[in-house]
Image (cartoon, rainbow, N blue to C red; front, side, top):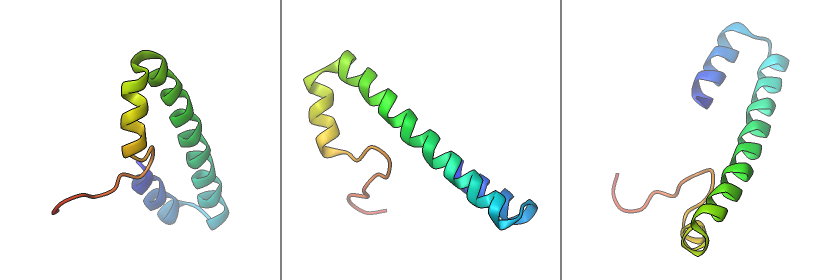
Length: 66
C-alpha cells in the first residue's frame, strides 16, 4: 500500500502533495495500530502482551534466511 502511494505520488503529483499523502498515511497507520492493539489486549490478554514484546507493531524484523 505504501509503495503504491509513493509511486502514484511521484508520477502524478507535486512533491507537496506526495508529502501530504505520506503524512496522512503515517497518521492513519499509527491510529490503526493503537486501536488494534487495544482490541487484541482485551481479547487475548497476557498471551498478546507476550507476543507484542517479541514482535514489532509496524515494521517486522527478518529472522532467519530470506
